[in-house]
Amino acid sequence: MIRNDFNHIMHLLSSWPEITISTFRIKKIYLRSIGLIIASTDYTDIKLLLTHIFVVCLYETDGLNSYKQPPKCEISKTYLKRRIATHIVELNDFFNSRESEDDELNEDYTDVVEESPNTSIFLEFKSIFENVKNEANYDDEGDHDNMQFN
Image (cartoon, rainbow, N blue to C red):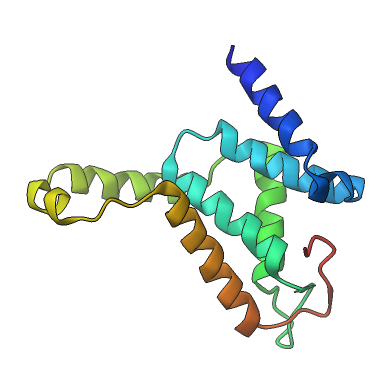
């Protein structure tokens, strides 16, 4: 049942006009990256993957910056390729996030829950997108065009 749902979602995504008009390599990196999100069970991992996908999508340049260092787009693209190839989460990041979650579970949040606004997951994803979009306007540029830029 789960495999069928995964395939159904991937089929729907591959029929989007933005994906269908893309070249094979671009289509493959986006669909496989979104597949990682679908298969993920950790919300912080999903946000991290979305951030990397948005960085690859929104930064115009790639390669090395003026300091001969890889810019954010190159780092995100490398991260996504490594995750697609291995399907392994960086264990240090994963365990550090788990430790902080364990610490949070030990605290009493009854007052915070009553005071916190009802936020939507879509608003949070939109916030991630907007933050990356704003960073893309002011960040270092690479030495060649980003082929995955949309």
